[in-house]
Length: 215
Image 1 (cartoon, helix red, strand yellow):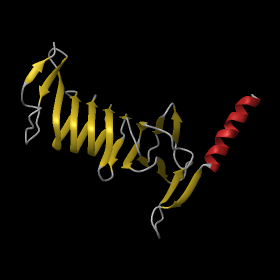
Image 2 (cartoon, rainbow, N blue to C red):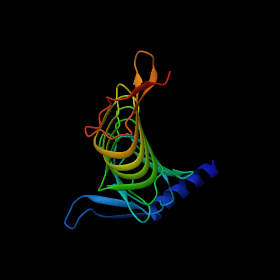
Image 3 (cartoon, rainbow, N blue to C red):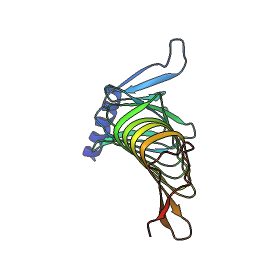
């Protein structure tokens, strides 16, 4: 029992000492809290009712709307994974700046939006449930997988891209250009992935050409 209380007290001490609250803009009533104890991560996992603002930067950093205690939220790092969870009725806004992001996974009703052009060398993105993403990317290699009823709007450029889309999900890649692009959509009849080789860029960037059944 003493050990449990000690752990709780330690966590509260870390949260109190490792946060910095300030106004979003001069004269603004909105408060932002910087989680100064969070810095070493290369993957992001988000659950619940969260709006994630994704930014490229020279060092990692996390800010959230309000204070840490205003939301039924959990922000933690485990094995290099930044995990953000919030199931409150009011959506939690979190701004995450990343120097080198390898993977992003979003579940439930999470919204993901890049602020400006987001750069990464090699990035894996997976959306589940009703998660939505609006992404402006500049990547060497990008892998995007849409599951369930998720939705993604992507723009920008890549050298190589692989886009896997479930039949219940929606992908808009009209403004996305890649030197090599492979698109896959699940065949509802055979439940097998169907590949669309679009190495020669289609100006409309639609999933309409060179279908090859993997089965």
